[in-house]
Image (cartoon, rainbow over all chains, first blue to last red; front, side):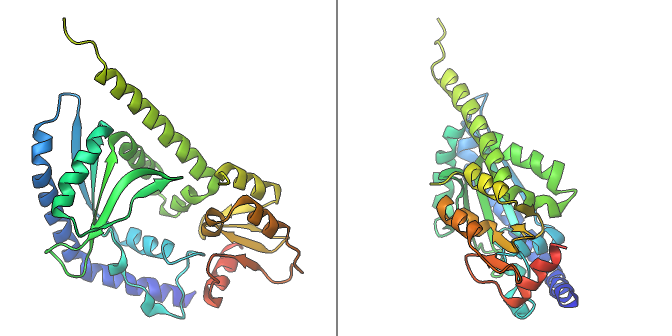
Length: 212
Length: 81
């Protein structure tokens, strides 16, 4: 138990060493992405939306995320403490681009790939269906801290935000509830319902009767 | 591909419960532990076979994609209480 505390304390110390760079990466990515998307944002129709949100992962979330990603069993292997570094996380600085309607997603993706073409794609999927187009890589603000951006349908992104603020923010240990097979099934049903809602909306907008 | 619901039914029928700290399903009397990663990556018949596999139920048996280290095994078992 004492060993586990030492691993986590070492990671907390590392976090505060990295924090100024994490902030710089988040700030630079937000500026770059807003600039890249300006032509699309300026051409949106009245009902369309494009929102860019940035966040710096907090210390405990970062340590918990590294533990969850440390492999099956979700435990730090105390026999190999040097295996772990928060710099291995892709999303210490993260940006989420919320898009409505979803048909704009590919346009946003293409625009950002022109600038971030070397970044590694890591899409968020649910049983073969892409929920978010996600990429990570380095920018000129830091050689140690990676940044991540993800492009997601606004309805799905807002559902994730509600889920996060209602459940996981106040009680981070509950995050693993979402990985249970039963909760994965329920989440899949929510995503399917949101997609059906959006598809219907788009089809009605697309086939609306032209003004007479 | 076996659906998540079918896999969940197999686990329910086998008396397995979910541990949110370690993301594993376990059955204390069978002394078996399945990681979510293993369950996601294996089909229903393999999972069912593993659930039904005979063991002496003295030592915990881990069904993981990669064999866990002794340190990880110890922490997982401790967290089950």
